[in-house]
Image (cartoon, rainbow, N blue to C red; front, side, top):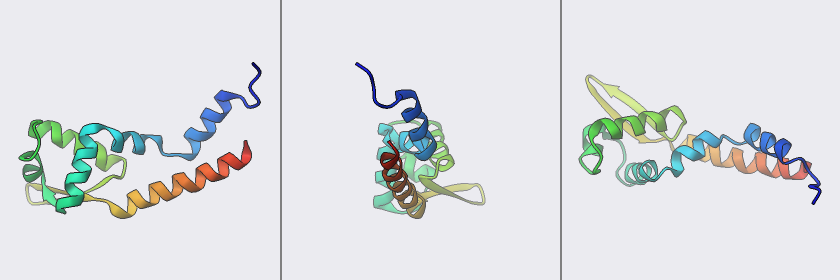
Amino acid sequence: MNAKYDPEKCRELIQETIDIEFFRTICDPVRSELLIFLASNGELSIGEIAENFPQNRSGISRHLDYMNRFGAVERRKEGREVFYRVDKEQIAHKFESASDNMKALLKQI
């Protein structure tokens, strides 16, 4: 079967137009639960968040740092305490951008 389009080229175009790491970040089961928890409860300290999950505090902290790096949550430090909240604007932007970019990409192929 001859493909009409080069699958490798399509893969490259998709990776260039969509922030795949962001979507991997929020699709991870623990991270998606953290996102839902923060969306439901607002800004919380790492301690308050960790109390509500079976993972230890350092594991939760690593997940939240990763989520912060890819734009799913915002981090704020107050003294020695670290607080996290959902980055609503960034998440909305990532979804809108992915949708717009995918529409444009599909017109090309």
